[in-house]
Image (cartoon, rainbow, N blue to C red; front, side, top):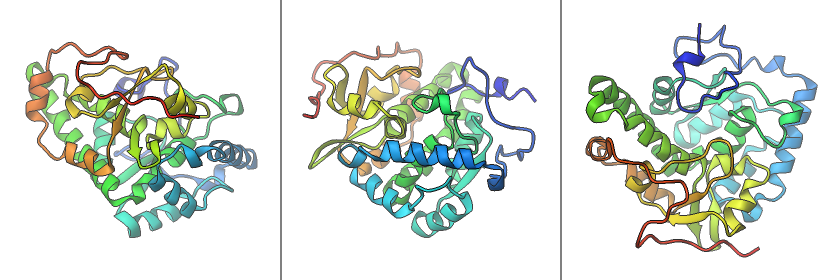
Length: 296
């Protein structure tokens, strides 16, 4: 099977990693926990320790509280164990996947309250940077906030919206051909690279930042990037980088704001944005609220 040809957003020029030979029709697979080596468990422990050492003053409180309860710092997580806890908390579970999966499969899993987590772990030379998501990024970055009921509902709503956008784009590409790209931008600037305003200042909830060794400091404290108040349509029309730090981060007021932003039907939004020129990565529009960097 040519899995690369079935992937679009998130695919890299380096080819797709992971063993797709034993996956089910829905693109999920067994975690095969016993196949992890002692070296991989040790590398995971080092990654976990390195990323968690400084996030107390960087991550949002919901993330920190859930991460502490997970107690998953000593060995690669067993998805079945985490799923049991997730189901009790928010009705979610983890779905093992071999690597990047197609949009339709990704949206379907989210709509079913099943979060896809990659089974393979990065190599030692990729300790500080990896091109595509591995088990550490998916688990450490994404899973803690799935214990938050509002964020968990947001993710399911996003998945359901993605399934609809996929159908619209196939049925009428002239009107809705850009729908999936709009949704990809929304996911990127919220779930992966989102900031949130708190009583303690700006904090991080985006998994792409939280699982990075150096982007948290850049996102919160560096004067170079723009930190702009979240507006759904603006985000869905904004380009982003996949291979370096962002020029712009969008700041939400609360997790509830995210859920409310996905509640309306996006169909008229797709129609309105179809064919519109996307905003450059570093632009600030008139009357936009821009947050200053957090003091060190």
